[in-house]
Length: 368
Image (cartoon, rainbow, N blue to C red):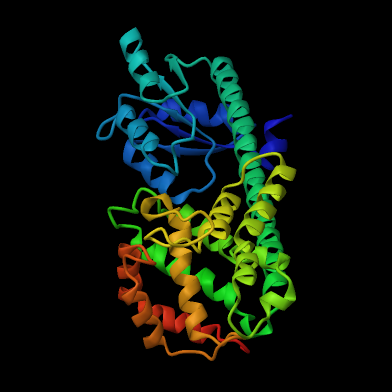
């Protein structure tokens, strides 16, 4: 592997020195193998660095009037654009302390004058080979990161399509609720975003959590695929035995997701939320819900959020057993059940952003 094969052309070297004889000698020695730029002072060097994109190495004198080599090195290493350019100090300062200072500032080598052309050429070649290899690995890593990111996005897209497809299996058994799963995704996202700075919820809600809730929401009623049509599509009230069967959709949904997770052989965050939502979104704050009669903080936050999203959508949309009610009716029902059916603070969040719920319902109205 050669420098030219990695870079595609001859490397560019900047020589910075206020001594004209040194500049002339180094220019003559280096130009046979490299593209060479010359600067007779610190400011000139900075001007060249500001105007050149491809610079591979700097040979830098220390003792110069105005801006000295140490200052130039410090500036370059503090600049993200130039910090990876290797710097070789080339100087008449021979004390060990000076060399230690130069290397401590980030230089890769330190050559003392008088100049020995073979030594300079060997040191320059070695550092350029190291830089070329580092650049190659850096570019390779960037390329691999891009590939991984692309594949990750593809996997997420496939997951979301599959989740939405599975959830639709439950919803298509009742064609009056075609956009229910999409609406509940946006309801739960809106609630979570509003509550993310609330003292009770800020340790739970983050960008990541909101994304997981959004992806999990479509599976909240997946258990309905196990409910017989005669019950699921019944237009009137359930008798006790029918209601018991209907309530089983929470457990059926949780078990289906749990079995899928076992098949994977490892835990998945969004499936954890999906299980919580499917199993517990019919629990009530006062402990009178189902399937476990959980109360208060014992109900997972994800399920408490979905409880309001699901009930609101059920009220404002047509169901086989009822005509749609108005947004105001839904808001009044949720407000009236603050602290009984619903978490009080989540209820307050809903009331604060209820116009957003109304807009979501209109945006994804059935039939659109």
